[in-house]
Image 1 (cartoon, rainbow, N blue to C red):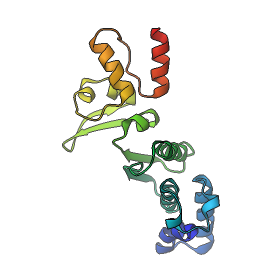
Image 2: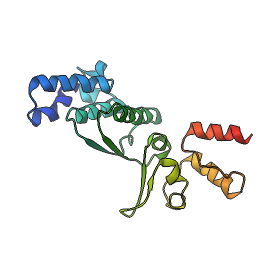
Image 3: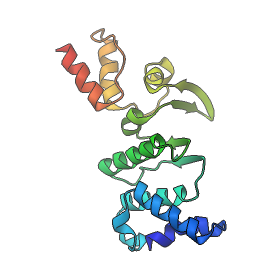
Length: 180
């Protein structure tokens, strides 16, 4: 069941049962999967499985977690929920650093504290999300540019817009309203 799945890592590194039980309870609470405790991992949805995987990692109490495409098999709503969960974990200081490697920039950019743009294994740009997406390196990098960015990039090319490119739907709405 889900509890055993979360216990697997701590059990294998010799964490005493009382501490392991405490970690499991905390991780289940943080990831909001109390209702899944006794279910088998193969009986739950992809988004729920991702939450269980995150709880399993948290139970090990690492300082840094690296996620490679954590939203790849999820629908947009579940993907945003998972990324919001990662942000919540970071804000609550459960982990000092979370690195997310993700191609779905439209959902990850609004939550990113920093963005690192890599081309052929080399860092070509690094900084706060607005800084990176407003730079020539980003716009010429060949990455899948989010729609909210590409629309305003086209407006910039036609000298209709000269401001900072938006990184979220909310910023896009606000910019459109300010142009009216």
